[in-house]
Length: 251
Image 1 (cartoon, rainbow, N blue to C red):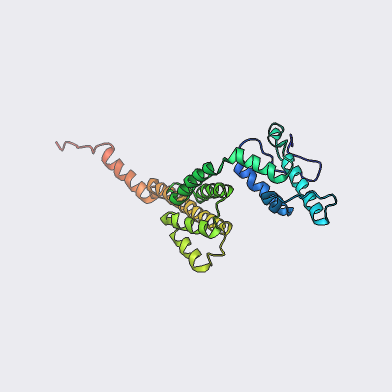
Image 2 (cartoon, one colour; image 1 turned 45 degrees about the horizontal axis):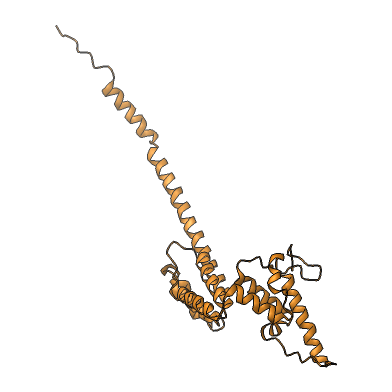
């Protein structure tokens, strides 16, 4: 259990569960367990025959399981530790948390159906940036994976490429023609789309700036009167608008 998100036992970067966003906490914990070669033990458990003198393999499993259980305990805020206080194995503690915060199989099935529908029907809107749309898709995909859905990067990439607005047609064609989409990751796609969007935005800003400058110069030219024209207008103005000619009486 942890109250400040840190530990003096080498786990200073533990993701701490605070009662919300369990799906994302679970994903981070899975990654941590895999990095420590503990995930298979947490997910499947192990059979503890409890012999009088256990062999070396069983001793090693017990040691690893205790380590995994300790990590789970350290990754919980104090108020949530009581949920798993009676658990004696990492799998038992993990299953307790999963059941409470993800729900039972029926609940998970319903939530997955909702997420699948959201994923399949999602489309990028004309006013939406690539960053916003990709974040929206990523959030749904991560939730699906948290509920146990097996969804590959290839599926996600294909969905995104089909769902972009028409202004991305050029970059979509370029990506499809120059890459093996079976090996093209979501991160690769995100990098390409964001770079394309940045270039388009820079080009638009440059055009707007040029148009503004041109408009300003045009307005300035319209207000400037050539010197020779100005003098001519003044002369004619004086002839017409000056004193009238004097008419002398010949008589």
